[in-house]
Structures are given as C-alpha cells and as structure tokens.
Image (cartoon, rainbow, N blue to C red):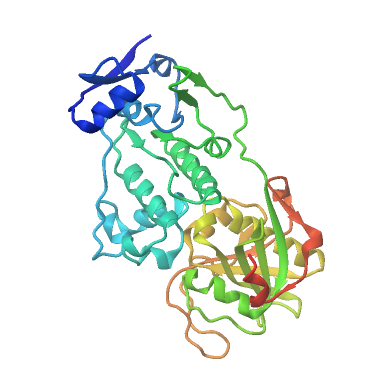
Length: 380
C-alpha cells in the first residue's frame, strides 16, 4: 500500500527536553507520521462526489491535496455578493447561487462579510464550483465544520444535486459523518481503513424531512420579511402558515383572496419564504403544493405569481401547475389602475392533478395545527 510520510525536524529547547525526558521519546531529531494513500480504485469507475473522512489529525487535508491545489477565495467586500461572480452573466450567476441553495435575493445584494456563516459557506461553494473548468476536480477542505448541523445537511443535498446535474467532480474532506446520507457520495475514503469504499445508490433519495405546520399570526412575518425579494409589507388580511423542523422556523406562506380572476373561492399565494439555512431542499415548492392541495380539497382555486427563477422553473416542471395566460408577460395595470412591477414574472394555476404526491419526501404533522404568536416563536 502506498503511503505519505510527513517528516519535520525538531528544534530542541527546554520544552522539547521536558517532553523527551517525561515520555521517553527515542528520536529527538525529527518527528514523522505515515498516512495510507490508496486512491487507485477511483480510476476504475465514473464518479462525481468523493469524501475523505476521519477525525482531526488523521491526514485528511494531506490526502485531499493529492487531487490538486486547494484554492482560497477572496471576495471583494465593497461589492454585492452576486457582483463577485463577474465571469458569468447576471442571470447565470443568479441561477448558480440558487442551485447551491442560496436563493435569497436580498442576500445576493449584501457584501460577503455581512452574511451568516451558512450563507458565506454556500457562497464559497458556489464560487469554487462555478470557477471550475471541465474535468477539474473541486477540492473542499473542512467541509461543514463551521456551520450548524441542520444547515450542513441542507447544504449537502443542494450541493450534490448541482454537481450531478452538471456532471462535475468534487472531493470533500470532513470530520462529520452525519452529512453522508444527504451528500450521497459515490465513494468515501478513511485514512484508518486505507481504501476507497464505493457507494452505489440505485435510487438517490435523501432522508425524510419531518415538517410541522401551524396557522400563525401576522407578527410571525417579522422572522421572514427580510428574506423576501419584494417589499417587506404583508397584507394584514392574509391567512398565514408557518412550517418548522424540530421547533425551528423554516418556511412561511401567506394566502389572499384573488378578486377579478375567479369567484369568491379563488386564492393566490401572496408570500412564500424559506429561511436561507434551509434553501436547496425543495421545501418551498413542496409546502406550496401542500397548502394548495388543502385549499383544492375544499373547492378553492390557487394561483401564484413569482419572479423567483428557482421557484418559477420548478413549477414549470411540476404537473400540479399550469401556466396562465399572463405567464412570463409584463403586466400593465390592475383593475384599480395601480401600476404593477414592469417585469416579466412566472404565473401559474394549481390543477390538483396529483393532489399532494410529495408527502413521501416530506412528512407533515397534521395534528400540529395551532395559532402561533411572536411570543411563542421566541421559544424556538
């Protein structure tokens, strides 16, 4: 078996002398460590994602460097985050950030240093992956070491979807094993085992996500409004729903009547927001389908108009939704003469053909319906 031997000379002083005498160290001239290296099997099959895992001091970073140079990123803190992706055109930069699970539009306009740890980490991933040339292996050291574990899982799932969709290669070094079932690597390597272990998944499926749903008050919007791409205003007559994971707020949907389009049982989704730490898991469209199905079963018709490219393109592929006559058209004025935003947007109508077929992926606690106030939310 091949191995890497790292040797360093010892500069002797009173401190090293203390260690020599106290612990009976024989070699007082140098120190060395041997790290098993056996990546030959990676060349025998096609792969997109590899993970080198193990505890601190097991040689993960040294092994990662066998695949190439680990590049650092220096974002320009004078610029908006999205402006740092200047080798892409603006639309492609927005799609790249969204694909890595960083789809909060207000976040794109903030400088890198003002982002949360989770947002910074996703931004760095997007930059390295977007910059990678064809057949270049992207290398990520200390993967998810500085982020919350729930964030690490959602980030891993969004990352693996993008890597496989674009047929890129990435190798990550991590001391965390909880990401594996979300990252779904093609192979893993442990320095302690000294061999590549291949993982063949006939159906790539992440673990279930258990969401709870609550009717909530207007004040709950305060947790989500800064992450919405339009104004922070919310119509106080809206019916609002909160979604949580393990008592942590995750998503918010507001529903309003839609006069002028249908009868009194016509509704529209006025606001839908997923907090940045949970973007990239498909929660947004799933909870939209869930709420729409609830209304549909009570003979309500649901519509949505959105400028979010991630949600709009996702609805285009979903047979639960069909485009309306105003889809991707620039609006003029509404019935009151109020000028609308002069920009094309996605406009869809819920059909109810599949009802809520996504419940096999995200499980809802139907008994959790209750009214939640801002005071109650501080307990999360």
